[in-house]
Length: 127
Image (tube, rainbow, N blue to C red):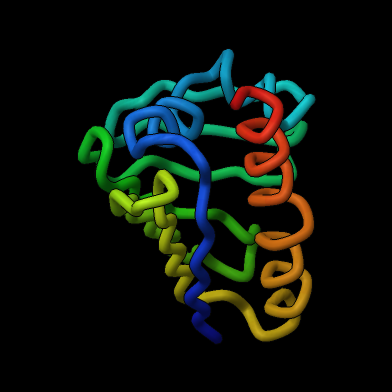
């Protein structure tokens, strides 16, 4: 199992980023795919046509999202997204722990090339 930590800057305030990550309709806008999300601890969710499946563990509006992501028989990993005010908008800290070794490279690239790239593009179009 491996862990990763990444940082990104988004040109909007933390409340807007939080809403984009926790509201089903907004997730569908920036991913361009069906999503299922009820922003309550204990609720299961799916994104990108079930490519990401998991459960919400903790929410602090405008500040933090903690999710458990499923990897089938290989177990679960924990994703913690922390939002910090930044002079350019929001600093997004991603901590993803417990990634199965064979999925690490794909997950790491996925954060950059798909998940956050889609969110950055969405907010660039909005601003």
